[in-house]
Image (cartoon, rainbow, N blue to C red; front, side, top):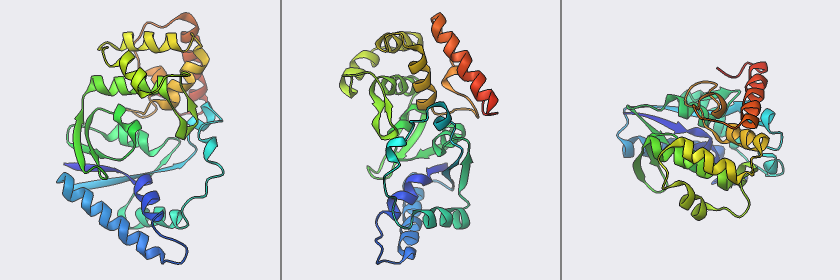
Length: 246
């Protein structure tokens, strides 16, 4: 088994345990220990770390994406921790997308996705949560359900707003009984009051890639309302202008 690890969280969480009066090497040591613990817990014989780099396409689709974090002060040694992972663990840094997308692309039958990020539950396959010390399998249908529930709930941490007054419980009641993606789409799209522009923008921001450049807009095979088709086409043309879609 090969472990693909969310290095954004490894770096952030370990850096956050170290204060200004402590040596940065303590954070480095804690990252090394955490990585080893993940490998032992998952029986992985190899691993790859993924970090988010520059030019995130989501910020070009939606300028307000993660804008709520601009005043957040990061842990003091965060950049040093990221560099350490690149220099000492050969961490792969994304360009144009996020580490989440790279984790989605490389997920397969012989890999385990190691993260604490609930968004990655829309990726099917084996998952490991190192805080819960829990390993489980997400099937294809549950992965799709998770995405469409996220469309309803939104993601406040990323400044993405879903449907007013719909939280996890109500979203689950609407989506969990459904097996067909068309039904999931129809339910969620109606809750957006047929606001095609906002729906497609949110879908492209929330969707985690399974293939390089694969937005929600260019991977689905759904019957779409005309206004939604137009927004899908516009979003694909925009991404092509950035050379970031297939």
